[in-house]
Image (cartoon, rainbow, N blue to C red):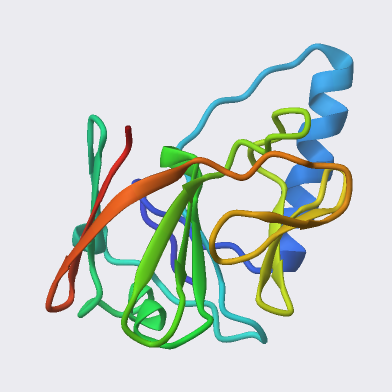
Length: 161
């Protein structure tokens, strides 16, 4: 699997390994910083995300769905977690893209996400949110704030409020 300085894609296994390491470091008072982009694609076919596929500029995130790796968002039910922007992005129906904060409304966990049976799941306390950001399972009772999304062909622009 290739990695570049701007965007790194992790498998679920790698993500959990990193999350556990981070927990150990936090317990010991050691801090690390970084900007990562992660995608749930499944299997061992993790995409390599070209630098020009995701552009983050202030409150704007621009996704180029023509680029390999991020092109999974062209498919219904596929999702991306953009750690650097704390944003969850999901293709709802094959065309419509929605984006939400990844800061869980239960206790503020922001980096422990998976996508299960069409729902985003915060793995801190297992709350699940549907593709409208509404809580459907677990302890969270408040919806995830949604960001404005516009799509012009395969260019998706997310504007964080």
